[in-house]
Image (cartoon, rainbow, N blue to C red; front, side, top):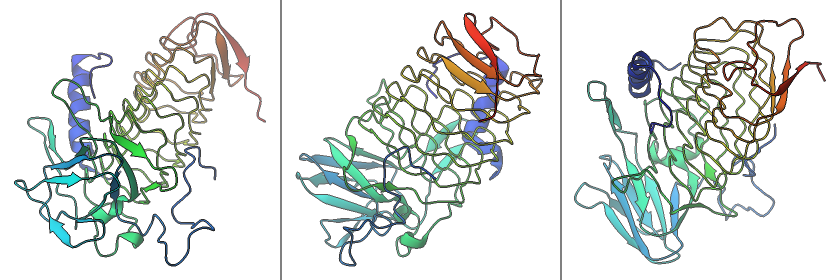
Length: 367
């Protein structure tokens, strides 16, 4: 996380430990516009593999290089369907011409975290010029049977995969969506931190992959699309039971995001939505929040800095948990509508940690 707002020293220590360790535990519609990989389109035939059957692929739009930092011992690639080439620390750069396709394979993540230094050593993929990204990311975990793989067992498996730093900021301008070929993240069983900061700073990404998991793990989507400033829509998030830090900063700084996914979860966990939409300045309406009992820090800073947000529906009737709504509506629109349960009288009014100043309060009526 890159210092968008400050918290107390105690929270800072706790958050850093959780973000690195993941607590040590595994804890309908498609708004992204991508076609689910499991269902071939009519144009696909037996001669044309679905994206589920296609390994993770980068297709060069212009000539350049693909660099693989911290390569795993089993990492290899095929360029334009040729022979396998192994990647090592001393042979980690691939020269590409416009139109070249590089498919990646491995037999398991070797990403590691260091609690004492709060650092993560992770495989990173960076293009020096624009590249389309598509195919099944599970080809990095099971090179021979990735098309059937739906379980991630290694913590931080894909963490920081496309994260790139120029030495001062985290930004990756060259990763692009392909108009017809989707990026597939098919896992339904997740591990702690598995997608943490996977696309952080990918400013060229306009749509997100489908995320089908219904059982989450600690930190699983932590900062996944942090700073993806061109992302206009979010994937469906079908989970109804959450894990600690699971959506922490997930869409933080996604300034082009105009709609948020439905959030059907009724069983929350500590820090689960912390800063989830922080700084999403194009977001006008929050998804309905059906949970009746909140968890500690669960909505902390959730919509902080959403300057266009003017509509919130929250069905909570128990907001006694520590810091559960602290600064959750700081910096929103100066006028708006807050819908609540009629019997709920515990909300603080004229407060960035309750109901904002200038907003109209209405009793919620079930549709």
